Amino acid sequence: MSGETILVLGGAGYIGSHTCLALSQAGYRVVVYDSLIHGHRQFAKFGPLEQGDIRDTQRLSSVIAQHKPAAIIHFAALIEAGVSVRDPADFYDVNVGGVLSLLNAARANGMPPIVFSSTCATYGLPQTPALDETHPQWPINPYGWTKFCAERMFADFRAAYGQRSTWLRYFNAAGAAPEHGLGEHHDPETHVIPLAMFSLLGKRESFTMFGEDYDTRDGSCVRDYIHVLDLADAHLRAARQLIDGAQGDAYNLGTGDGTTVKEIVTAVERASNRKIPLIKADRRAGDPSALVANSAKAARDLGWTPKRNLDEIVAGAWAWHAREEAKVFG
Image 1 (cartoon, helix red, strand yellow):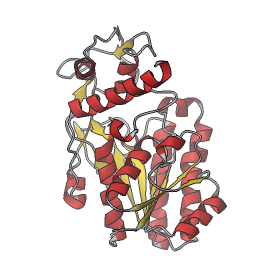
Image 2 (cartoon, one colour):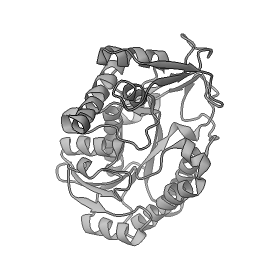
Image 3 (tube, one colour):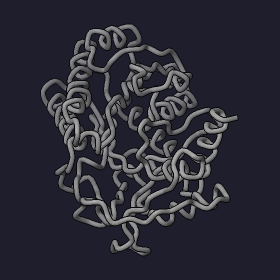
Image 4 (cartoon, helix red, strand yellow):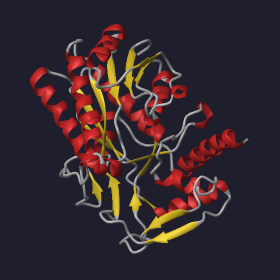
């Protein structure tokens, strides 16, 4: 693998930058392609940065032709499900139009294989306690539908043109690599762990827990939190599998162990040695009691299993957010 080039679209974002770190540590040459609209220039530090929009097919095609990647990993997308409900046009433009642009650019340059960053949001409301890849796909918001449409496009291009691809449907990405200057930096931020931490860092007055009457062990929602570096490892393995000639497949990525919101609160308080100012509110409409991955297929085919537990996730995230806050106010 020494010296092989991987082109990472959206490599200056959260999961993308951590994946670039993992690729670099594994000996790959990393090239980042990012518009920097939502990505961060300081995160693109593991190889050259090519600035451009995923929808700019000519620019993207030129970058592929120049760097001749052995594989492409595609993260460049809009991700906020709530925003997608209010403004679906942008989501279809970027998340679906961007994939079509990528597929056309790849087709014009020898069709290097592609690892696609997908989501458990393609499944919609869970029908089983743990979701595997055979679970029906019926998204409940435009964000989920855009990812579902993209998966369908990859499948069609594979069947028609031989474009090999793998789709990774992950659950709740969390954690950071503060020792490498990487962490979660979204605007707006909607994820539970950073929001809980923001209530301790003066960025929010409190943290709201929605619902205590779910059919779970403590009454609060259960979600599957997966360390971002474990996700990065899965992307590396999927890319290697494609480079070695696999046709590609769909894989769930999660721990298989759900964590309740109350357990998140306790873990953040333990890591910070502070008490979260907590507000309890009614359930939000459409929130399922539990959403947990069955990742047996990824373990079997990719040799992938997550290695980091909740305390490691929270400790890294706290170190990152506390450090970033110190930079602002220190």
